[in-house]
Length: 552
Image (cartoon, rainbow, N blue to C red; front, top):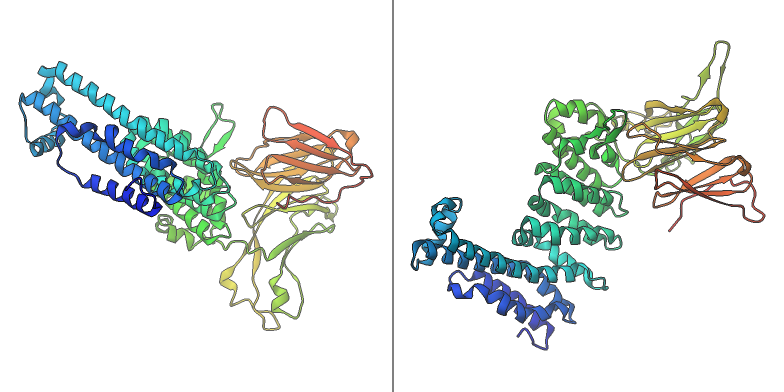
């Protein structure tokens, strides 16, 4: 039936065969090699069957076939070993019970070391033969780049725990882990990326903490900047599960300092804490789960000393410790996410204003600013004056704003909309309104006076940094909000003029800027050694006013 012309019959035959083999409990020692010498040969052609339903059924059966083959080998090995020690045949039930009860007491068999060594050598040889066959199947499936490879790879992940037990630590490190981590490169197949994040904890349980931190965590971090929210939420839950299993250390969670103590490398909590206020409900709840697991892992009082200050900007008020222990408790205290119904403007009077577009629908077409920020105001000993606001940028995935002024100062300030006052805040027309306020303000940087004004401001997140870039007459400075240092400086030659606008690519690797003389400058910021710059001056091009990210 495995060679039937009907694909449904073939698929069902494969499923039934693997299930029936798994039910076999009693068999003679001579059947130890029945899988590599007979069964595997009879089913291996199905991996290349033209019908997708047959290939999926075969893939779903790989793990249970491998587990059953290993069980056959283990039992036959135990029978041979105990027959050698007892110098005669022993009942199978007795052998199995003794084998699993006295597994650690190998000193009892020291008198037959030579014979048992030969048996062990045979066992290792047969196990390697089984693993090589299954490994070829796994690699064939995971490296398939055809249009119908997605369901096969998802089917392989469903029973990955069994496969990990079959291969053991070394086999997983050599075969399973490298193959499945490559799934994260399939950005078009977001379902596969999400499924991998769901099953990674089972793999990590086999490879241990060191390999998890070195190989798995960096790969999961790439999923946290995916465009698909289900991938991000699955990645956060994966990290939470790894923390719960004790496979991520405090050093990775909280960060470390360099050997000279001058530079701080942020931990994954600080890197991705902004996801607590992501617009997606699923992502916010998954981020709450991750933070709650981190709190339980770090434990009191370190959770209040090191973790709470990181997440406090995303909470309405100081959270009580019992709420910090659960994802529900954290979620109940998060500030509301951005609804994209608000925008911010800056003007030459030195103020920034927050506007809420819902007012247009809630009133007779009137639109008034809900908040005015005048933190850029300066004062000297004789008079008070205001600088001009030259540019502003919203800090991604947050309620914060970066603004630059004509005095060469960049501010980062945070806006909160107090939901508790929704019912109480009523204007003179009887319409309910929101109550907004600035909850925090920081003067991020003040550039050297010889560099002049802040001409443009830009914020973007990468997998490891939250960067505010700001342009002056000399070039583009940067500042990492997570660890307070300048990751790069992009120099602009004077003959190109001064920067009037800039934007970052969707991949966060390139920065483009336009000048008042019509030049376009492009930098690659992926290397820390040197920054590659190219420039163009399109024919007939003059002052560049504004750039935007690629729409694709």
